[in-house]
Length: 105
Image (cartoon, rainbow, N blue to C red; front, top):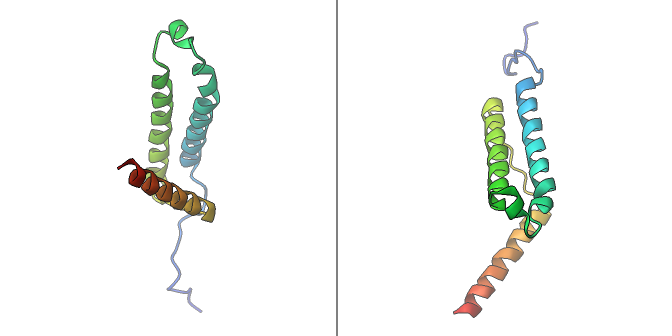
């Protein structure tokens, strides 16, 4: 009996090690940026560091987004997950924004 011709043939189902490494590195930079965020945003630290504290967040977020973009390009798949609490949060934000805009005028 012949193989089923309607099923796609996969060369291998092995995990992409480079994609996993890029995603792990992106998670590391994200966690590092936001764990060190309270330390860098202590008042008066800018004098000791010699650079604006916002640059730290911009650079950390940019590195994270670049690595995640490379991961998505490497894998070729984009997954969007919209959990119900996120939808409720976005609706509440939209309602609050519309009410604040109406009161402002």
